[in-house]
Length: 115
Image (cartoon, rainbow, N blue to C red):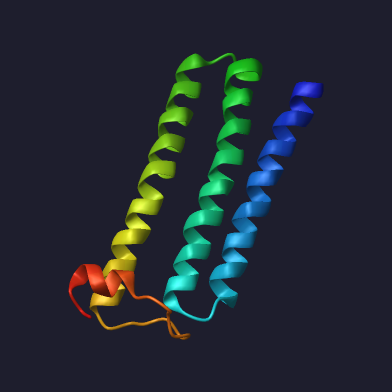
């Protein structure tokens, strides 16, 4: 019974992060802020849901193979999500999209040779 409560809490935490990321996508002012909200917060949501699903698969279902699949999917999402967001941000910057507020330093522009 206590394990089931822990699983439900972990999945609930993941749900809260996912909803916060969705709200951030809607509320943020520019492309780069939206990508930060969608990447960081939703990655944290995946961690909570994946931990809950891992506990459920191992202790309630008794399926190690399902737990391994869940762990691999979670690791791929945690690894690929920030990399994909960085690639999209770089592409948006190269396409001429800039943040609404001026930046103190433009490190990406410096790295791309735009200074």
